[in-house]
Image 1 (cartoon, rainbow, N blue to C red):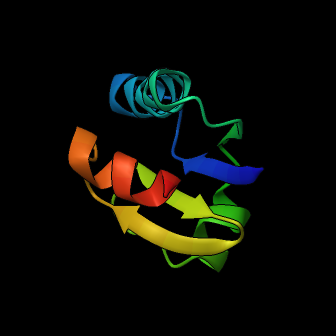
Image 2 (tube, rainbow, N blue to C red):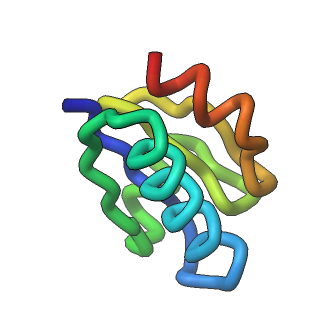
Length: 77
């Protein structure tokens, strides 16, 4: 199971990103764990300057925008 951390302040884009990851994973039949991380120290540890950020299994994969469906699908493979 992949662990996704959505890094951000809890803004609309961050919430939407978490929901997209969950729904696309469900569509693909992939089991994932999605955590919304709002702690600024953790975000800085990933060097996220623009939210939302997405870390997969403790590695930053994306930041600064809501990721596309294609990008999320590529993460699930």
